[in-house]
Image (cartoon, rainbow, N blue to C red; front, side, top):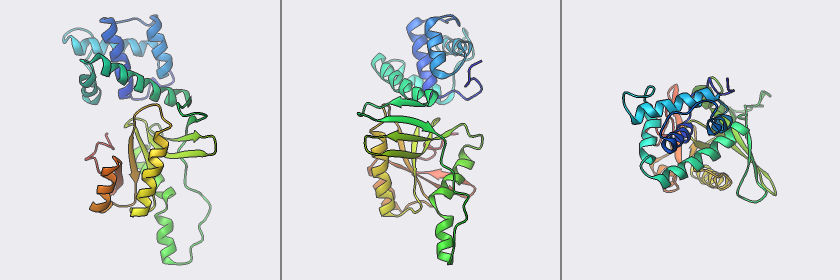
Length: 259
């Protein structure tokens, strides 16, 4: 059994296996060299890869193979399966993301940059000195507390959200959260105000340039930004996530927070 056999399959994994199916046009066994290479990349058993190829056989040839794939992986597959160049690009992107997630560290295309997956930063357990109600309010809305609230809601099992550490020639950058299932980089800010959001946009753009794969960008804030500031984020192609009762909402009508 592979280390990730019990974890949900990512859309990226489906894309890579779908490419294998399309190139071979048949099911493949566990001793196949490419099946074993993909299994090592995914951190899964060769048997799980072989079964997933069977799912694609059932998808492309109803009544044959195993149960067809469904949901988001199927929609993504429909987007790329008829365009060989698009599929090859999707596979290259998927392999780059999975190499980071499963190997824990990759080298960026940006010179002298090393990128590592790390655990999300937790709020400090040290007591906070509070003198006024305003200071208490600010402490309650701190980035660490908001990040932990979101993590507890979004990733109660601890297998979805990660941080990313980026070593540059002069400094170390830390991405607050990376949702590996939704493929979203998330920067946490204590306030949904202009200066905070402008700073977040710059940080997210800086992080993204070190990554060798496409990724969505979002800022996590304590409340929904104003319409004007939502326009600012939209113009920069950065989404917003904020608390909504006991849950969270996003500016993408759920696109940034898929189930």
